[in-house]
Amino acid sequence: YKATYTYYLNTTLGIYVYFCTYVFINVYYLFILVHVFIANAKSDSNVSRTFKKLQLVPNVIPTAPQNKLTVIYGEDSEVELGNSFEITDTLSPPKVTWDGDEDSLYTLIMTGPDVPFPQQPRPSQILHWLIGNIEGNDLDSGDVIAPYLQPLPPPTSDPLRYTLLVYKQNDVENFTELSTLKRKGFKIADFAEKHNLDGPVFGNFFLASTVKAIF
Image (tube, rainbow, N blue to C red):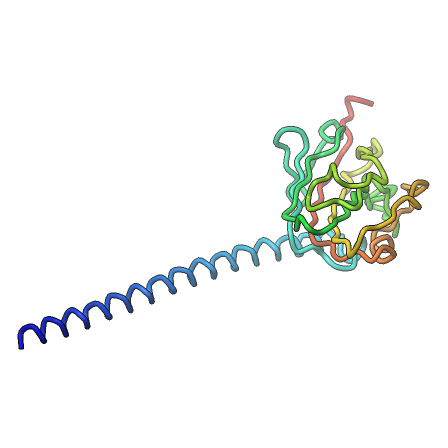
């Protein structure tokens, strides 16, 4: 009888411990997934909300990116959805990275929509940088259609907005026809539609102002 009781007790206890462990592990993973989802949702909504707040949507692009594009000038001057830079900080191209699928192709476009002044915006933009057929997030693998052009706000202007957007391509694009592409009067939304680009999937922007001392 004691042996039977002990066996029953051990078996029941084992099942109980197994059940509790199983429940704990599943609840723990669910907790982690919920927090990751909430964090991503907050981050994504912040990017979209900021693009709309600064009227980049719908004045420049019809839909906002949901993911933040990592853009760093110099060693550690990171673009943070509308922070300010002096033009001396933006002389050279920034480091640009995103969480891209290595088997996909992307197009990076940088424009200045505040032409000629933010107080008098026009429907078109100045094209500052354009690289297509980027494999994953390796900029060096892409085709440079328009080399980097540093921001140059007029001396008397308020800070100007500069956007960097990444679109996902559906196929390899033949960009050779764009060798004579004009920088002035560029319309990023029209370009994306013409080349069947999806997105923008990643985006960021900053403000740039002139340093009076260099004029």
